Length: 457
Image (cartoon, rainbow, N blue to C red; front, side, top):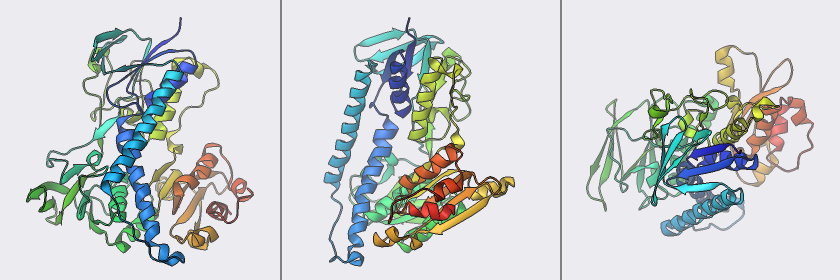
């Protein structure tokens, strides 16, 4: 008899787990209340990157004169942009729907909760359906965190999901939160021509990143006219005027005030774990509402798994997808054979600012903090022919390696195409390659990737 596998939530983790488990012979049922592909993915990640791609075209247009062209005139058209974002998201959802159907995955539209350890209740427009799975995956994702001192209205005070795009282009946007999401919005609306102020609660943007990487981004922000409120924590957001005019005032704990036409909350997310019947099934959650998991993504109940944002691990779609794949393999017993655990420390990540930022593995500052001996090599893109040809020589490649063995431990890239180039270093970190393996690769010339070999040398 086939393993009965029920997945609650069809985001990157749920879709990957469903298709992989179905290929392995499981009887898979997915329950999704919103959009196949995941709200965080198709309502956050994909729209934001689509808008950033539009902003990148605008940036290129502004640099046209420096590349031997007459000045180009281009401006964002919000309705056309909104239509483009919708078209991209709809196309991806249709593709995911087709993929699940091709694999024989049953999709139930509705909400689901655990009634007991082996009982799932699905509430659908057609009524209640009870399922009796052998294994369950919770992959319900997360949503933007809204502090008690802010009241988003979708017009002047926005959450991230209300800004793809907003009803009107902000004249002056105050971004609250300087993590990955916050700095991407700073870049995005700056490229659209808005004035931007960023409220930074720490002493650097991207507090979890390499200080040198953060400094490079701060320098670019300041050069582009972005105002930085460093060491300031927002404590209140107030509106003055009506929807057609007036200001939004952001008050900080040190007495400073940021005034703009719009404010954007980019201060993290909270897991969608309430209403899932976790207590009835005996599943434990932590103080933040996340479901703690082991190396197999199992909760404290061995047959109930959690993956994606709700698991409290790295909130990356790539990580969620790999978690889903590993869950499928574990459910189907493949972990008893050759099976590689997911190593979160080797997950590559990217920030789609301009210049882009990407990193993977051990960071220089982290190595020094733990007293590990490392070799650090760095090459600026200003020495790279392709970067000069493209008219954008900002940034650098930094590679961290073991001085005794030459094995690549990590790396950071700031510059055009960083999100693509980091894949080479990620592969080196995962496969325990040496810097000589990168140096001795015969790469294309001229190419940005040559900077990787130069940095490894």
